[in-house]
Amino acid sequence: MDVFGGGNSITLFRVAGIRIAVDWSWFVFLFIVIVWLSSFYGDILDEPGSTQSYLLAVASAAGFFGSILLHEMGHAFAAKRSGIGIRTIRLWLFGGIAEMDQESPNPGTEFKVAVAGPLVSLLIAIVLCVIGIQAAGVNDFRDALEMRITASTTGPITMVAWLAAVNILVLGFNLLPAFPMDGGRIVRSIAWKVTGKRSAATRFAAGLGRIFGFLFIALGIVWAVNGNVFSGLWLAMIGFLVNSSARAASQSTVTEKLEHVTVAEVMDPEPVAIPGDIDCARAMEEYFLRFGWSWFPVVDASGTFIGMAVRDRVEAVPEVERMTTRVDTLTERDPAFAVSRTAGLDSLLGNPQLRRFGALMVTDDQGLLAGVVTIEQLGRALQA
Image (cartoon, rainbow, N blue to C red; front, side):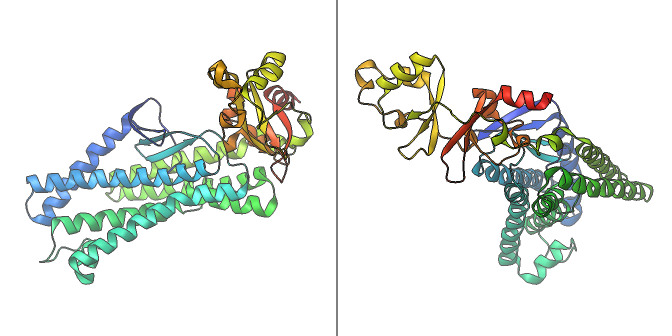
């Protein structure tokens, strides 16, 4: 589930430049899962406290958190393909969260990013079921999937069945239309597409989120009273967090006001750009030294925006090679460098490239450079 994040976290490793980290609460939950699964596998194998049951518990816990990580990586890679930066994937007590640098700029991107995680969980469940059926047969694996102990039950098959069932549960739970969970974001993307207004869609999805939050709290309390104390308290806490996040999203007014102002209304329509086919010596003399800026947009012969030329990279070229080195060979290319002229100003909030350069390039429907919008212009719009 990708809704919330904890505080300080510990970096485990990096994947494709994305930091994978765990919150301190993750260790608590990992310990609880291993203890519970050790008892579970002890009963399955009729060997309480055995080494095998402990090893199966550890392997299952690793598989569970691996599944959560792959789920979040599905979101992360879908976001990166759409030009949205990902800083960190964090695992914690209530699942995981992919921390994005900005909100999705349009409903199509919102839908693709939101649905990517559940699709990964579905794929994992299918693969595990295929492995289990091939190894144990349809009937025995179905018994294992339903957690029925039979004479043919084995530890490894039970572990595969448990992981398959967990991924099915993660899939179903995340698809509930409770914003800001995946299902809620899918609902928001659809409502955004229908209404054309992000703020109205957010309020609608957040309203559903608050309803489900209260339902989770009520169901959790019922479970706890009936003896399922841990599961009940866990579900009630999720309900509280869902409710709080949905309420905060529904009360936000900044993006609602900004989405009515398009980038074209505040941009500078005459940006200074470097032709990509000139050499670095001309670029230094006619642009960087003349204007004194640390970067310039680069365009091709047709005026299509290519990327950004940064002074440090151009200066790093030896002087004897500058006249034979084209600027476009040194250009940094990233979809996040540009924004459509029809986009709402709310789509700029949190953009990491806006923080880096202090501006974003504006392009038209054909990808031609149409202007530049600066952080100062965004600031004036916020003040207004």
